[in-house]
Amino acid sequence: MPIDKTKQDEIINLARDLMSIESTPNRPDMQIKCIDLICDKYQTVFKTFRFDIDGHPAVVLTNSNDLSSEVTFSGHIDVVSGEPQLFSPIIEDDRLSGRGAYDMKAAIALYVVTAADYIKSGGQRKVAVVITSDEETTGNGTRSLIEELGLKTNFAIICDGGTDTKIVTKQKGGLHVKIRLTGKSAHGAYPWRGDNPILKAFKLYEDLTRRFPEPTEYNQWQTSVMLSRIETSNSINQVPGEAYLYLDARYIDPKDNNEIQSIIKNHVASTGDIEILNEHKMFSTDTDNSYVKKLAQSMQKFNSEKISYDVENGASDAVYFSLKDMPAALFRPIGANLHQSDEWVSIASLENCFHVLLDFLTN
Image (cartoon, rainbow, N blue to C red; front, top):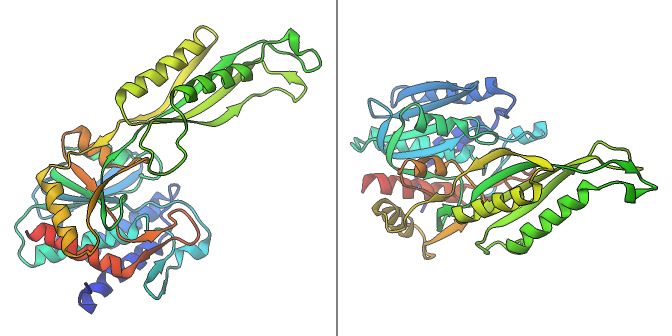
């Protein structure tokens, strides 16, 4: 369903302005510029709470007097790096293209315009738009807002997963591990004099994948362990004295996480050491939650395809809400190719999502 031209222009123009700013992880000054742009444009609508979190800006735009709201729209304005031309957004037919179109500056524009419209029309529900700028790296902004700065909400919507007809209520937990395996160095011409730690790494990985086979397609909801890197510092004609193995595990049950770490420890024992580089818990929200059901109803109003619930292999900031018993759900406008040179989002779908979010707030 189309929206009036003024509202469409407001969403698209704000999205294009944000997409024109090169707010990559190493440019916190450009991240601040994005947030300044939004705050200046909507200063008469929202109360603003601004923060610096580990050198990256964050802001909460709200009609509340504090960081508590009934409904929160959460997202980020940082983007991955790209060629300069990607920061000159293009509109062609129904597509808005450029860096951040799909991930997720157009969604940020959608959040801000929807919340502003709701507040200006006299809506009394407490609503907040949370914008961080480190999701592509640490994700620490959302975590800090919730765990340290007191952000609270009854329900969070994150347009950074799912589709326009699928609501994501579960995402895998993750574990990044660096493992040092030791052996005995030797000349490459006399391998029997050495003890090759790379072979130990292969054996470890074989045992892990025997227990947790690698998924072969998108809809296999199962735990996986991916070998991402092996490093040694020896010459090509040497048996290495030590090797470093990097693993990326994604789990659907905390018990699987424990088992993965147990298998690794049994292999390493006294011949190396283990370093947990990063770990994040699973995200999960009950589909019987009243807010989730209402979101599904609002989505169904404006879609002919049946709305369904889904799970995702990746991760998002939704986990930080669910860890504090604040339910969350993900859906997003139609688009594709995030982090790629041909990233785009559908303008018609953005309009449709405006109707969905406004209906959700209003009813």
